Image (cartoon, rainbow, N blue to C red; front, side):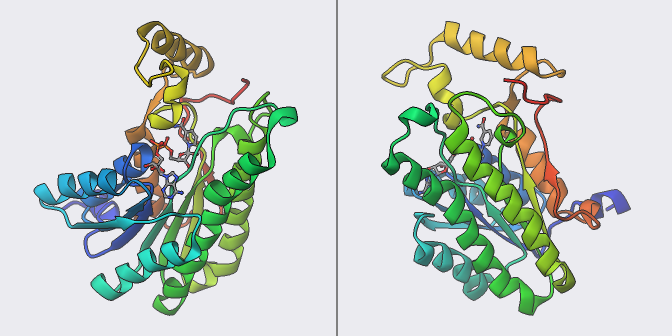
Length: 267
Ligand SMILES: NC(=O)c1ccc[n+]([C@@H]2O[C@H](COP(=O)([O-])OP(=O)(O)OC[C@H]3O[C@@H](n4cnc5c(N)ncnc54)[C@H](O)[C@@H]3O)[C@@H](O)[C@H]2O)c1
């Protein structure tokens, strides 16, 4: 193995990830497993999470998954504790699970707002706390939280979602200042427009079927904003994830990485 390959080698490391049933979480589980990490994954979609684990273990990887509702602290704690009890370490924590929300401020209900706060923000707080409980005594660790490009530019209908993701960015930067002395790095990823189930409502009909004209429009919209001329794939984000947890990013903490095709998010 060359020195450069060693920088991205995660052999012997244990990665806890939420949201592994789909999209960015699933792609990150595959990417980290390909780099040698053992995956301990959680998702509210248990069968989807199991499918990801089966894909990994049908190759040469190691992955276990369980049902986790990230709004429940006990579920998040149980996931992280499983990594410690079953594999003896918690090297990587990826707080990835999240949901979209597109409504004008005037129309957002209390129930919607509370749900967004619980799934997109409180879950990340729970995940960070659970991870550092293991990482501080270990004296090392990497946390990656998924924020969003929506934190960069205000746009109609994105206030509630953007608020949760801006708070995730602030949590990330602040926690980095607290745990750096324990050898723990904390970074966030703020993806641009990525083609996953999360963004499907933009190009599907009421029954969830893809409408080709809508999909073409979505690509055009993304391409018009991004200098690289396309919407992103989940794997584009997973690559950023791998970089941040790798030794290539050994001096990187408290940062917001932006895999977005170069867009400055002028919606
Ligand atoms: N796709 C994009 O364009 C985009 C852009 C910016 C940020 N993001 C963020 O990326 C993250 C991943 O999104 P994605 O695009 O992969 O979407 P996705 O819908 O493909 O995956 C999200 C996963 O989270 C899981 N999840 C939802 N609620 C949960 C809960 N309560 N407990 C446990 N798991 C739960 C879902 O079951 C799903 O597997 C989210 O935090 C999202 O906000 C996505």
